[in-house]
Length: 212
Image (cartoon, rainbow, N blue to C red; front, side, top):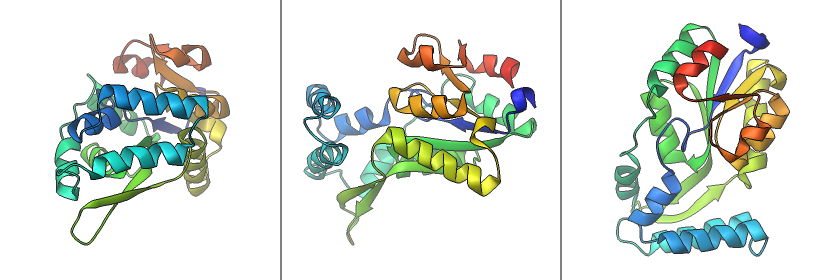
């Protein structure tokens, strides 16, 4: 194995799949792009906490008639993989690497994609909670994505007896920066804002075959 890497961690939104699942779900459940951006700016500026941001979004979702388990599952099931994603996952498996999927997205989607790609180890930072009638009533979050993702990765490393420096992370967002720093093996796509934090920058999934 190259660079003594034993585990490869993949992000989900805009990495394995096209588009941002939160924005897609929000638009389907009545949260406009403007509202979404406003809440994000409030969170980034410190005006509201991560939990407050989450709660405001979920409250908007709950007002929509499709905010049921089946409705949300139907919306999220329309994902599309980035070109070469599935083939690269299979290639990496054949090389003998452990693969984990860690995402700040929603458990329903993360579970679907993990099963679709036959990824055994996966973790979503947000779990939707439904009542006895399968209506959305809240979300359980593990906190800020930046720290939560690192915690999840450390848990997988401990379980698999792998040092975090023996991990590589394929990701695209600012909530992945701490994983890049902790592993020293962050990989992102050309044009992403976190290029400067990356160990390797790639044009496509095909390039991963030259790295691993």
